[in-house]
Image (cartoon, rainbow, N blue to C red; front, side, top):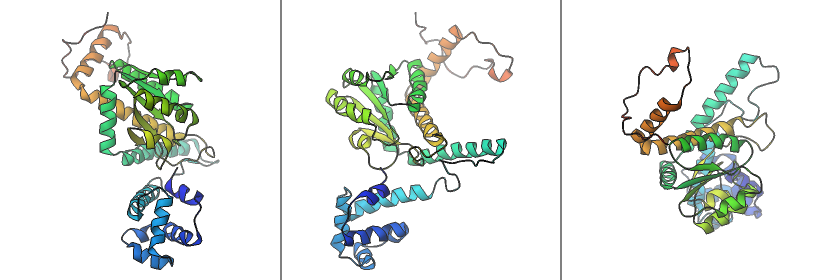
Length: 305
């Protein structure tokens, strides 16, 4: 849940509402303003700001202010000309629709990248790299996108699977241990199935990476690390989940690539050696011809029996 949504749903006293109205009216006004000054402008006692922050789950006003400004900066600096829910109009031409979807997806990738924190990406990469097995828990279209990630990871000898059968997720969760890295994927971070298996995964000692929208949610609260999906779409008042799907595909490609890079030469040699042995496809396009091999040593690659 976005912090702004949490502020709208939380019950505040009349004085606390004055603070909420003040900060919501123009977030830039609080950036370099002291508690005393904000209290004076909102016609409340300074302690009211502290109570507001604590009601929203923060230790104090400065913690709240930092989180609020970060969220507002994100919401006001991406997709300013593209509606992720209705990216094209009823009477747009075919090429106009094509251009708008391209613009949306390009913007989504840039948006997602802006949310990536180096520390979180580094930890996620290490957890995936060290894991003996990787399990993915998600649902609907996210499951289809995750299957491509699992395929890529298996090709570089990382045992990866997506829990696909409805009702089997609990059993899959119990089959994890401290050598398992789990990817929990949910746009809201409040998927009922994932919340059900979360305590099981913690009990089993699995390492958890959460992929969800920005804002406070159950998955990010209990995960070992998290990466954020672009957060621009409503739950169902939209033409399609363009932004969410693009954002998730990009994050998973990013994770595959950072894990791949941990053993770049070995992984590249492995893929090339197997491709040479078993990929018998032909093409008339010179772009696809394997005439120029990359500068990779393949002599030490082992072909599986």
